[in-house]
Image (cartoon, rainbow, N blue to C red; front, side, top):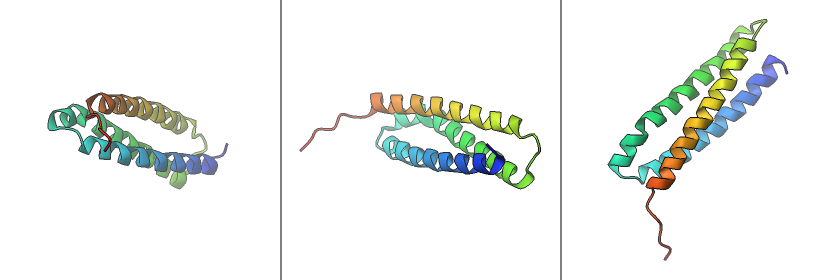
Length: 103
């Protein structure tokens, strides 16, 4: 995979993560203050990871390093870290969310 293809794939993945974060934030908005405070660090961590990954993709696109494998590894690890934080957050939201009653 060359740098351009990798950057394109990462941009698509980042768009997907932004959509997931938007969905998570809508669910968090429905929680009480105490539950929101418990999730604040996870949300901040997720936003920081997404920003860092976006910067790395931009770096790859503009600098075109001959050896871009270290940046690729960082981006792949960032994706793993984001997935873990996101899953923790969604699990907590599921436990903290009030039960909907149809009707």
